[in-house]
Amino acid sequence: DVKVTQSSRYLVKRTGEKVFLECVQDMDHENMFWYRQDPGLGLRLIYFSYDVKMKEKGDIPEGYSVSREKKERFSLILESASTNQTSMYLCASRPANQGAYGYTFGSGTRLTVV
Amino acid sequence: AQKITQTQPGMFVQEKEAVTLDCTYDTSDPSYGLFWYKQPSSGEMIFLIYQGSYDQQNATEGRYSLNFQKARKSANLVISASQLGDSAMYFCAMRDQGAQKLVFGQGTRLTINP
Image 1 (cartoon, chains in turn green, yellow):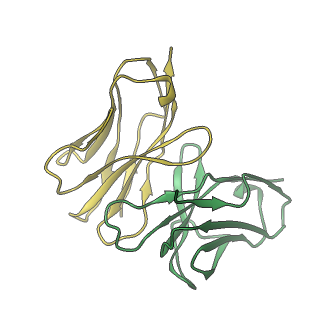
Image 2 (spheres, chains in turn orange, green):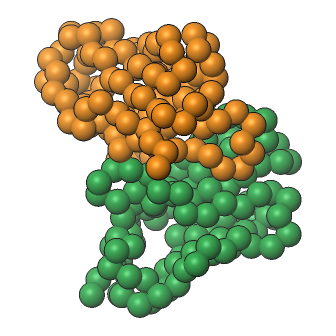
């Protein structure tokens, strides 16, 4: 069964800390995505990557950075966590040129910044 | 720019009734895809159904059907004979042809009452 695994289900961090959210997929997918989910706002794209070391900003990249050193792993980095980054974070992956389908999501990381 | 609007924050339905979840969209691309996802309390996003902009017939997958009205730019999800296990958040999403990212609506929380 194909999988996208997010390393932590729940995370509590202090304001100002550097935070790493990890996502690993075992499907050899080229594309990987980080979304943020907030009540009433749905899912909003933070960053995505279409290849190793390649990345593009999504709709809300401010305060975040990403790293993709290996095809299977896509990390989201909060350089200096703030309380307004308390949210649910979802990772997804998709093969290139899949057409209509192919998005697989992880189970999410619920981050609380105190 | 793409935009998805779900105007029903919450819906309450009796078990075994049919339910329609509303979704309207906006895009300037003539070729696009529309998706519906279910998110149970466990957090994972479960793909339900897909409709391509050039598909002649409305998509169906078991108890799920998509009422696609292209001129009105609407893509409502219809769940027939609702079950208690259908209680979840439901998201409408779209992807323009050639784009990699999904754009999501705000979501609708569906509660099925026994």
